[in-house]
Amino acid sequence: MKHINKKMEKNGVYPPSWDRGIGASTSFYVFAILFNKYRIKNKLFDARFIAKHARTIDKLIAAIYFTSVAGMIICLCIITLYKSLT
Image (cartoon, rainbow, N blue to C red; front, side, top):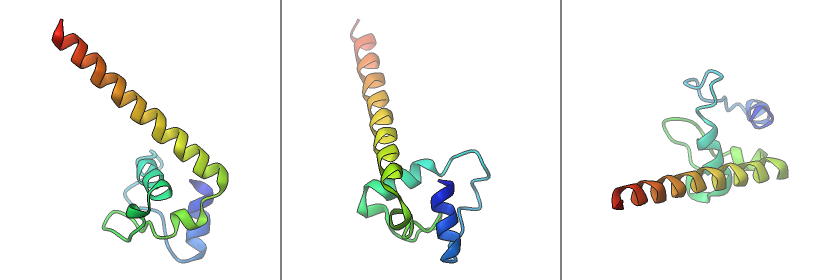
């Protein structure tokens, strides 16, 4: 994220002011990198330049992050369903 933020600052776009080092904007960055639908300027942050400045390694890390979070959610749903049936 630091690489993307530095490149965006050169274009005059600054990282979200509400994210002060805790990494809360990571999920937004992942969606902006992986999905065209989220590459818009919205109220939370300007996502138009995120995918533009993302390197191949950033795209790979975003895909791994998304896959692991989706897998965790699926596993939690299966566990919850299994526990509710027994």
